[in-house]
Every structure is written in structure tokens, then in C-alpha cells.
Amino acid sequence: MTFTIKTQSNIIKILGILMILGGVIRILANQWLFELFFMGHLWSDHPYYLYIYKVLGAFVIFTGISFLAISKNINQYRLLIKTWSLAFLIIGIVMLFSGLFAGLNIIFYLPDFFFCFVLALFLFMIRK
Image (tube, rainbow, N blue to C red; front, side):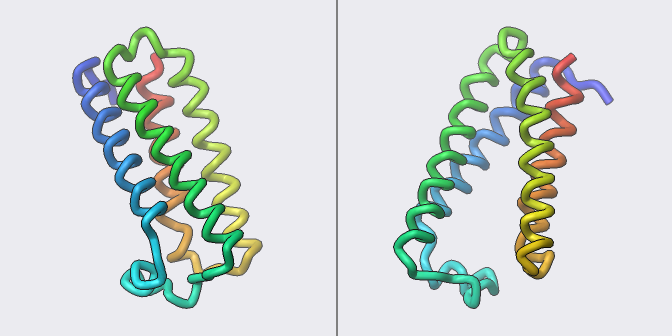
């Protein structure tokens, strides 16, 4: 499947916005939000876990902002897109095995690693 440059740019822009929103949600997450998504038993109010969760949210926002910047001129950033396709594949694999080895129910990490795999595939397809 091939996408025009404009379509590629729009998809990357949408992904960037979604990542920014996802990062903000992670930064603002609290016990109520975990319970809303039926993950209340995974909530920890330990300061270290709260810190890690918020830092992860900031990195997700960073990635989203980077996607928005790249969407302005995809041809200029082809090498970065190729690198990101590999990086998101590795991140997805780490998420998958970390969730498995931690003994989590797949429903809690399926969206994360699935998103990374789909993103890696999309980036791999448009890097050409």
C-alpha cells in the first residue's frame, strides 16, 4: 500500500496529536482514571511509580511533538522515520515480553504493544 506525501503527513500529524493526548493523560492519571478503565487494582500511589508514570507521559508528549515537526517535511526526515520504525518495533517487543513476564492480563498491555507494532509497520511503509 502506498500513501501520497500529503496523506503520510496527515497520518503522522494525527498520530502526533494522539501521542500528545496520551502523554497528557499519563501525566494527569490518578486512581479514578485507572478505575474508569477497569485497572484500579494496578494503581500504585508509591511516589516512585507516580514519578515513572509521569516521566513516561512526558516522553510520549516529546514523541508526539516530534511527529508534528516531522509531518511538516517528511522528505527531510526519511532517515529518522526509518530509525523510528525500528525503534517502535523494539519498544513493542519489550512491551510484549515485559507484560508477559510480569504476569499481567494481556488486556492491560495489548493496546500499547499493538500500537507500537502498527506504528512501526506504518513508518516502515512510508520511509521509501
